[in-house]
Image (cartoon, rainbow, N blue to C red; front, side, top):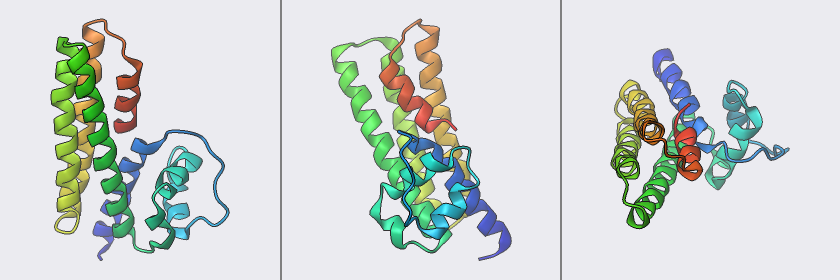
Length: 163
């Protein structure tokens, strides 16, 4: 892999790690060296390690592209769960801001799926698609704020997507 491709995969992995900062747990002494190396370059090393180690495949991953693939798969799974959660809220409370969030989370999921599909073909496009996913979460958050609606459970999910 050339230097530019390596750099893009690092950037992609970093942008995805913001999705998974759920709880500040202590780091594991047997952390994979690649995970350690990538996470040292993030804002919160402990959260980064915990997020990546929540998938057992990272323990044996030695290639950056494989780690990026795992992170994207996690992003697709988490954003799909968030979309389902928002859709469930929409059934109970059919308001315009929640309707907009449901729509935009469809775009978030689509962007992460696109990034995952592009990863082996074009790392630059995959990186762009992963970053675009944050736009949907930001639009959702803005829709809530504009309507004066506070739904912390959606805002938390939006924060996971937006670096």
